[in-house]
Amino acid sequence: MTGLAGRRLASVFYGWWIVVAGFVIQLLNGALLFHAFSAYILPLQAEFGWNRTQVSGAFAMARAESGILGPIQGWFIDRYGPRRIMRVGNVLFAVGFLLLSRVTGIYSFYGAFAIIAVGSSLGGFMPITAAMTSWFSRWRSTALGLMLAGMGVGGLLVPGVVWFLGEYGWRTSAQLSAVLMLVLGLPATQVMRKRPEHVRPDGDPASSHPARAPGPAPAATSPAAAALAPQLEPEVSYTARQAIATPSFWLLALVHGCALLIVGTVLTHQIPHMVEGIGLSPERAASVVAALVMITLVGQLTGGLLGDRLNKRLVIFGAMWLHAVAMVVFACATTVVGALAFTVLHGAAWGVRGTLINAIRADYFGSRYYATITGWNSLMVMIGMTAGPLFSGVIRDVTGDYRSAFLALAAIAVVASVASVLARPPGPPPVAEPV
Image (cartoon, rainbow, N blue to C red; front, side, top):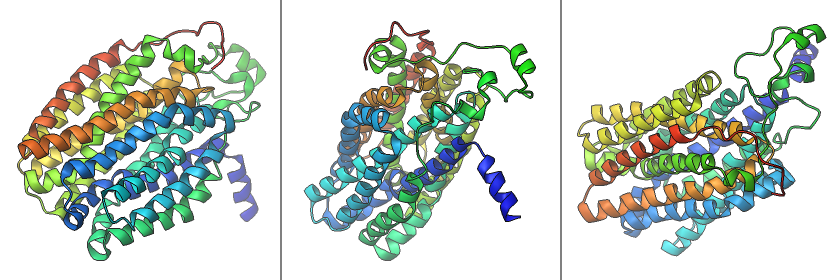
């Protein structure tokens, strides 16, 4: 039985092991940082007396740092492969949390969080997606959806994070986060690698792989069946310079940046708003966050399935409208029912759009220079992730609530929905040139 099980495991297309490892790393990022940062705000304010703008400024600074480093990081990933970069990133992530557990003031807090942000960026999403887009073509959206679900599952642990913070303090929580990344994150990193040239995407035989067609694999793979199968055009391969010269790159970057303007704001301010603005207890607010994460998880899986079957641009258009409605609901919510309505809308939009915006970039520009192209896209995304939390923190400090900030973000989501429709496929690239 053991030998049979081993042969079955060995027969699994290696790309799916990349998905599993990416899921684990995304789970850690979601549970320890991405969703959990909001839970640190109130304890930090209570101990140091910082205002909301100062605390949320760390999140904004971290996003700015990762965005500025994005093009360089992307080039290193395409040049040296994802595994080496991720090793460095996960170690920095752990070191940053150890330093966070020892902060004594605002500057040491910013310094520690900067290291965490660099580590999370180098060891997380970008290198994982760079690896996965090279291993998958027809099943790209599905694979990305499964990997991104790790972030959602990690978010389900937020109530546990809140409980641990309350029982043992935020410093001990930071120390435990460092240990978990070293014990679980580093081993998962070892699985990551770029697809060898002789291996076809999706595990298909070389003679029957349709490079860009969505749907299930061909039922027959004999030479005769392969000859009768429709041979689609090969996947495009844009260099970073060629991609940046297209309107589609900037339109997709605008959509992504506006979406993360909203996501970054919610991640940073959702628990404080639910406690202060809606009147929920910290524990109830954490439970609502867990519900949000569950809906996001379902959205990620659904987005993966939809993206391999439907027009990605139109699905993203609908998701941006859901983002807009969600922010209006959150701004006006006065009870837990309103907060839960927000979670359904925002979670569905976030999950579906987050999966497809990354898949469509690989569809449009190819996987060969995906990390470098995504790195340049991160500059636009950085504006959103930086401006959203900081803008909303300032509005709250000036007006006493988040209502005006959330309504402004709803309007921005509508603008982004139009950009998503205009972002048409760019077609074949011009004559190849250096990156």
